[in-house]
Image (cartoon, rainbow, N blue to C red):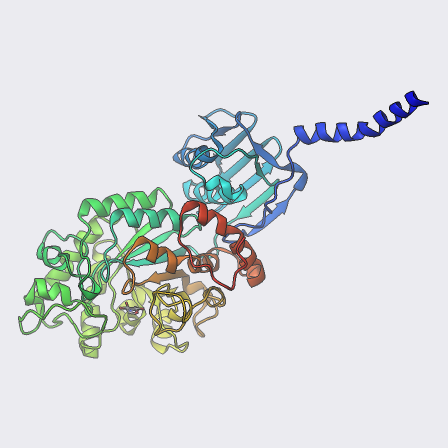
Length: 516
Ligand code: NGO
């Protein structure tokens, strides 16, 4: 009797033993959904039984630079060697080039026996790697080994961008940001498939890029005390700039340089009084007013200056765009503005670049081959519509949705308020394709979120205003419109919070989001 009881107990325990044994050999399912990625992926087919686990024996297969970037991203937290090989292998994450995935698209297939990332080129591989990193637990962001299982959810993702241009802007003129700070920012924005960084390099307060033919621009315009309120100062040397271009390119980001003209030029005119019509240097201004300065449109020296600047900038900029500002020229009479653009827009093309400017350049018939950056709050814009009908393209930066320098609300520190408060739902709640009536969807190249720096000094200030709102703009730029869904976005964003915490990013804990 006793014996048979014991036997029964043993039999009852058996399935349990078997279950435990099988749990040890196949990983617990990933807690992360294939569809949890920011920005939302175009198509995802989950295959829950087919999760992949990164182990000490996992290898990375791929010959290019992106394989190295992936290994470097995964080694610190996993503590695994993750050697890189060129030959097919089992238990591998394989990166491979194959035509048919578009300029930046990729296919990611995750199965129990391996992960495969396919793309047409390097950009697609880089984007796929950003997705893969988000499919691992937030602890993957740690810079020391974490004891845990590294499971990637099974399935297939086919992903590609809605728009070719997904950008953000840093204003180095109002407060200078150092190359190190810019590199950190590049690291952070590249996680969300942002592919352009626009640098606002000159304004009334300061001039932040060395131009050899006009050295006093930075000697005087980049001197200490040339930030808003008499703060800071500084400028990029040509080596700094070239280094940033390369650093950004390694992360699939194109640098877009801007010299603002014919307005916003007070700093240049202090350095070279001959750029004013009366030849008298204006007084230094580090307040936040706009629209009071203008180049002297009738003087030939103005065009020598402009051409030198454009030539030197074009020489060190491999990207296609050169931004010439053109905004808020209240001190330039309308006819003079048109005369200026008639000469200057073709100069950009003379040096092999696509002219890019704030949407005011659309007033000029010479803007038909340009890109207009729409930053207005009003929705009816006849001059923009006319320029677009003539061939100009548009990048959408409506101030009331995309300006990262606007305050979040009345309580949070930092930021301006002229375009209203912009909480995450406001940054997310619009459609670049339909915001402006009369602009065909095919004329829109993409979106950009500018971060003006009147109220920002430090890296923390940049992070606080950029994150999480920039991710909303990144998603509008990348994800197909059918995926647009606030409930889904806010859930995915809330789940991203721990990654920023691990990474030391001081983001705004928006009350609209339930942060994990
Ligand atoms: C405006 C203005 C900038 C300001 C910014 C502040 C444009 C295109 N011009 O945007 O000079 O810095 O607002 O939000």
